[in-house]
Length: 336
Length: 156
Image 1: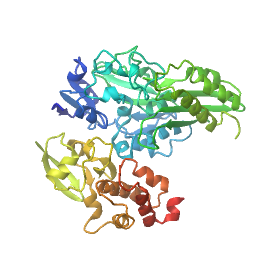
Image 2 (image 1 turned 90 degrees about the vertical axis):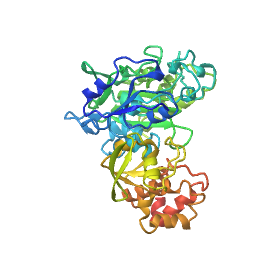
Image 3 (image 1 turned 90 degrees about the horizontal axis):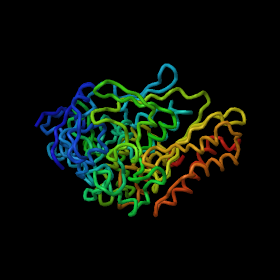
Image 4 (image 1 turned 135 degrees about the vertical axis):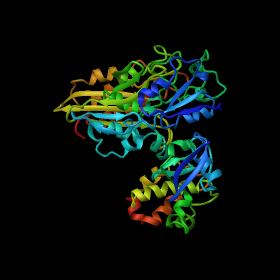
């Protein structure tokens, strides 16, 4: 591990100033943001990155904490610890998906330190990316070794030229809730749907997973007020019951009006380089009559267009069945 | 080197360390509190678990500058001068074998019991989900907690 300086700005503008306007290749960057540290410290240890400085956000007032907005939505500071979402029993109904996603992350020890912003900006878990000696395409190399090598945990949607999956649990939940990301840079603040914050390897820089500029900081998330009566859930399937990343995850919110589905949002985790909106299933669900047939068709639609690799075909039935389970649990299959 | 002021096991402590020194190293090397163990050094095993402002935290993943003015509790602080009742039942129920994971498990369980004196078995299991034990298979650890809090409640 290369030595580095630590900077502790007291406000976001100073933090932005301390970040470099330009960056060199991935292993010789000037400065990186330090939030809860639960991912970046291991990246430093494994020499995946070697910044000259870390810009710590923990001394900046106002970034930690979440609260209801006057209109019934949510504002979540980027430095909010996952445990504080997990322990907030008022995150129910439409917001249950967020609480369940936070509770599913890593271990209790990690969740006390890990932050919402850090969870959204954490780097891929692909074993080739995490291996210090594998010069994979995410680290400036020329090849995605997972494309032809071991790819059990890799993407079935949106892959190429890299086949990582986005590791965040909060990302699918917040995208399903139509959250907005607030990003602060040298020219002030910009806002965008969180869905547009994430970039496919074929669209944005191959070296990162989102639109954040080199000297920009994700400062908060704004969740708009969900329609009254919206229910939600986050289902995460993993190889062991706890402390693991998702093989497949489903974030689902929906609202039933009489015998019809008034609205439905369905976003998958663990299957693509970004939180993956199951658009075809959503279209099918909108304004449809609830019932087991609808659930079956939507579950099948959620895997249409998938392109599995040599070792991850199992993710298709897993995705279909998890979507089926989530929709059924929320009542889209009709009265149980 | 900088001087950091931290409350450790109820005592105000001033300690010299570089800002990015791991809390684990400061505890073990500078303060002689060797109860917290280094296993993996990257948050996977939980053998360095301490309480930071009462919340279980991997001491290997927190730099000292982030705990300035805050409060740490290690397994030495859980025990005080006598064993904590939790430690006693751990010993009696066979929840301790090689002992490498034990300080972390005791700290994690203590944090749970302080928050929820009558946890369900599921809550107990989740509370030590970040603590690897390769000896006991966890069953005797769960039984120890059940013994302490009353098994009917714990199974509920």
